[in-house]
Length: 428
Image (cartoon, rainbow, N blue to C red):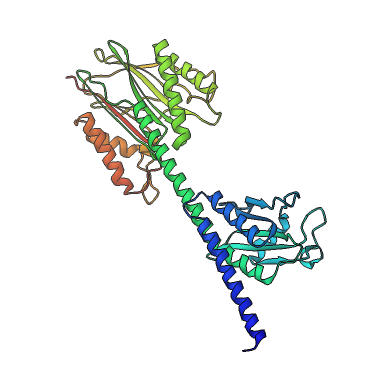
């Protein structure tokens, strides 16, 4: 072997050793369990150090962005340079999107590929940029600008940054997924706490009144929901009960539900008549909630001794009164839904709850529950089912309805919150 060949092999060996050293240096400096920005920061810092570049940057494609916008995560600049940080032109980013390949240019001003750039559009003479690819998908890019000594980027630099880019892409992706997982776990914990809070807002038990059977339940479509029901002691001889349905689902609906409950309870302390209570609740809800958020609401006040029921219905699905020998009576709306118009007025209606009468209150999560064929459970099915089980207890009727809805949907995901209340006059 000649001396020239030996020298060439020694040079290649030194380059290979140097590449391994740099890659090992980066590998030991980062960990997939570190925060994403920390991982990227160390990759960029090591790149400008080992390539002796003036500046380096990593930009990632924004997740879920239809416009495919790049977001610069980290930019490092050599402290001795003292120049304004370099920013990659949008059209250069477009080049990377279209080509998804290594970009090396040591005289970018004269590079025919980038004639569209003017002198104000860039402040660098040379660029070495590699794509960050995961299974053929572009996730971002790693770029370095200008060698500090004025030399051009070499093929060895190109090879090294390409290796670093290919190795870093998966590390960055792992770090991003790890952060997403942590955020998801944190969100799930917040939702669990929110669910606990919401459960504490709902009645823990139904009132025990001689001669009156009461059963109620709430099943949110998500961890938390926007349905609401409540029982209130108006006086020693009067029981207040209500059911409401907030527009939407999830956290926004749950927050409005809590607002509605606090607002409604404050009104109950000040006024006794259901219509006046709904008017006050509506006014406050209108002033303290978004213009796109509303609530349907039914409020009734029952005297268990006399059976007299006074109620006002703010646009809620009409509760059903079942009575022997008669078709179900619909307790229809006596006013608009809450939160729509500040000065909305509500009328009060009165009925008598006779012995063996049964009152069914529900939200549209029951009637609009769908099966895999997109068919709804429907009001007719609910009426028929309740009529067939009139002689059962209030709790048994509630359980029967929920079971039938579950069997009807047949594991189809619940699309809306479900709230159900059964009040039965058990007197002879």
